[in-house]
Length: 431
Image (cartoon, rainbow, N blue to C red; front, side, top):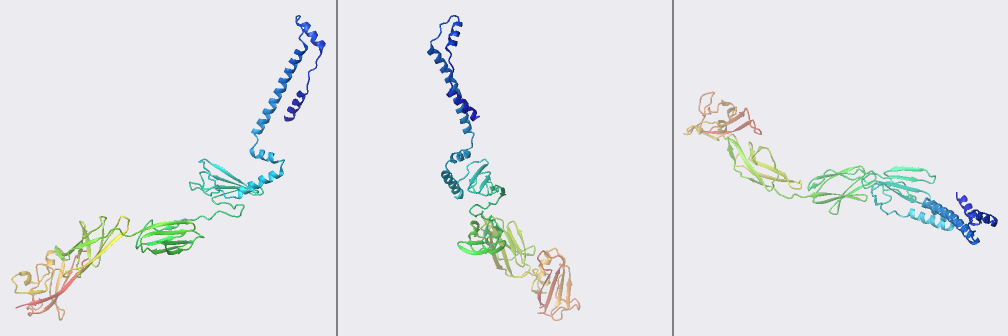
């Protein structure tokens, strides 16, 4: 097309219309007697027609060239402009290569899918991302999705990978992925055991607290330690740092008790209360039975004279608060049995022997009276209204004044935490 337009242009520039004077005069005579026009008018008309034709050809040619330039890629134009100047082409090539080897710090600011192209002497790397990577060579997008890397080698072979950055022209590659350390809990309290698991294969974990090194966790292992003070636990893995808070207890518990032993339905009871915290309280007691009644902890000391209770609760940080209290009671519970028998007493309760608790508690039992020297059974009953009066049931004789005997009670249905058997000594007064 370009050659045809050039030929038309050249032919029109040198073209002249032939002039025949006889023909013009003959035509003039035929036009109803019209007077022939002067010679200069004829030449003016011919020149005007030629000018119109030449102008049309030039406009068509220039318009075609403009459209051709507009449709040509910028890369092609750049190459075409540098074709005739080898020195300029070499300088441009070196500048592009330097641009490729320099660190890429430009951030893609579009929310749509974009393509960043780094062109160098021997390779082209195309990084495809979905949303705003931190750098043009980022290997993950803002959503946490792995980027897709596409690169061309010297043989124009296209390769593609996901998640891991390929080796660049300077021989460097992407840093290994750092997996987060796994804590056994989200927060801790003083005295807690902390377990730290390191899932990384090639990175060690350094644990510190209050600028003091605590321990090092090797790759693929875990360690446990006890927290001794409050503050932040810092775990360093490569260039990443994780923290966990350690709290001390924010409140205290206070245990209140009346050490007097009381008997409720002939059963021993000591009551404990607590203050200092509004959260629920858990109670424990050593060697005795206990139960919670209307916010009060009731202990039943069936054996011994010492009671140790522990109250525990949680503060606002979830840390455990513990308080322990130990008291002594004035006497040991033995079914409220008397220690002496006066057969001449006016009160029938003291004239015969029967533990008072057996007369008030609805429980089956067996009572035995033994000779302290021989161990022989002197008396036996299972009736709370039939107490022993100091007489040997085998001979029918009253024991001498000052005699000491042994007694034992076996319960058929003891309370929770209560022993099945009780025993003691009894001194007889017969005067």
